[in-house]
Length: 376
Image 1 (tube, one colour):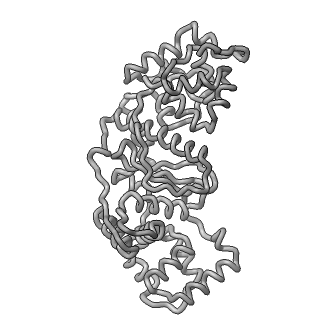
Image 2 (tube, one colour):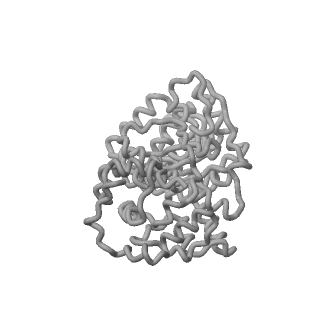
Image 3 (cartoon, one colour):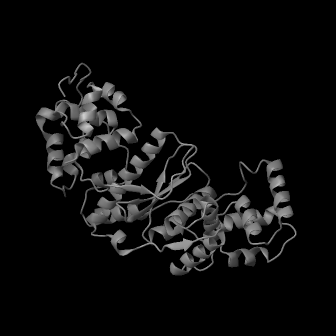
C-alpha cells in the first residue's frame, strides 16, 4: 500500500500545502510529511478527516498505484505558477489511473499494442511533411477531421479534457514511460482546443534535432495536420492577391481551424505574400477579431474512457456507482458506498473495512474539530 503517495496526490490536486492540510485535519505539518513519506500511517480517525478535507472517498487511499511516472514531452507553462502546474499533473495522473483501471477491467491494453510513429526533423518544413506522413499512416486522407479526439484515441493516445486555468492550453506526456497522453483546456473555443490538441500531438511524435524553434515547428505540424497543403490549395487556390473573411469563416467552420491560423497557413504555403498577410491581420486587429473571432467550432469531447466504463457496466463487471467513480463524478461528502463497488484488488478489502466497520462509520458525521494528533 502507498497511502502516502495517495495523500500527496490528492493534496496536490487540491492545491493545498502541507501546512494548510494539517490545519484542516487537526494534525501537525510534520505528521502530514510523515504520512506522505510512508514513515507513519494515519490513524483511522485521521484518515477519515483526510478524506473529508481532500474531498475523496475513503477507498481512494487504498487504490492500486497505476501511474508511477509522468514524463512531460516539453515544459512551456511559464504562465502557470508552480502550484498550478503540480495540480495539473496530479489531475492527469488521477484521470489516467481511472483510465487504466477501466482498460484492465476489460482486459484492454492498447498502450502495449499501439505505438505512436516518431519523426526525426531538422527543419520547420519537415514538420509539415511529418504531419502528412502521420495522416497517411492513420489513413485519414486530406478531408476535414471530425471528432479529432476520437481519431487520436483510436490510435492509442489518451486524450483528457481539463477545466484549466488561464495560461494553460495543453500538455502532453508519457505515463509510465509508454502511454501517450494529451490534456487540453476546455475553457477555450473549439477551434483553439483542436489546435492545442494537435500541437501537443506534435510534441509526442516529433523528434527535434538541432532545432531551436521548437514551438514554431510544432505549430506548423498542428496546422498541417488539421489542414494538409493539398486541402489548402484546393480550397484557396495556389496564388491569391487577397482573401475574403467570409470564405475564411466558412473554412474555419469546415476544418475547425481559426481564421488567424488559416491566414498563417496561406502565408506558410506561399498562397499569399507577406504584404497581404500583414494587411489581413491589421483588419483583424481593427475589428477586434484577434482576441475573439466570429464563427462556431464545436468543443472536442474525448469518449473512449466513457465507452470503456459503460461496457464494463453492461458486462456486469462493475456497478453503476463504481462507474461514476471511474468517470470522475464529484465525490459525495462522507463515506462512499463501498458495498456497491466490485472489489478487484486486495487493497480493496481494506477500503471496504474502513467504509463498513461500525467503529469507523460512527465518525461519519461527527465533529472532530477538537481532535489533534500530536504524536503522529
